[in-house]
Amino acid sequence: VQLQASGGGLVQAGGSLRLSCAASERTFSNYNMGWFRQAPGKEREFVASISGSSGSTYYADSVKGRFTISRDNAKNTVYLQMNSLKPVDTAVYYCAADLAGMTWIPSEGRYYDYWGQGTQVTVSS
Image 1 (tube, helix red, strand yellow):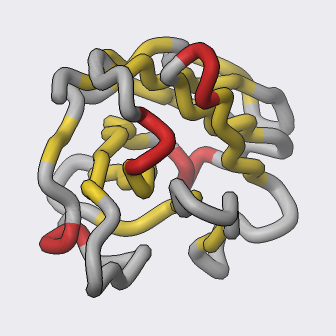
Image 2 (cartoon, rainbow, N blue to C red):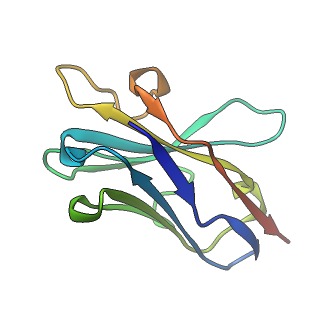
């Protein structure tokens, strides 16, 4: 599975961005999808995820109420709508895919099998 993330950029605090992640896999609906981010000098952290089967969503506390993850299985694409952006949201954002199986912990990167190349999000104060 190849994942292509896009939509990053420079935005002022309080602004919005929408990230997209297009997957090459035609059975996209079988995959749980997630967004993670990594800021300079920090470890990668979970942002949001969405299951392939039910579309259940999960969010990190730091983005809950501001970010929304969604998917369009017909377009093999997952989105991350980011509103009320803060300077602390500055990071490289990665999308990831997990072929849904028996075990999946949405917030743990080790459960994802495929990763995109990342897209830079910079929020200025």
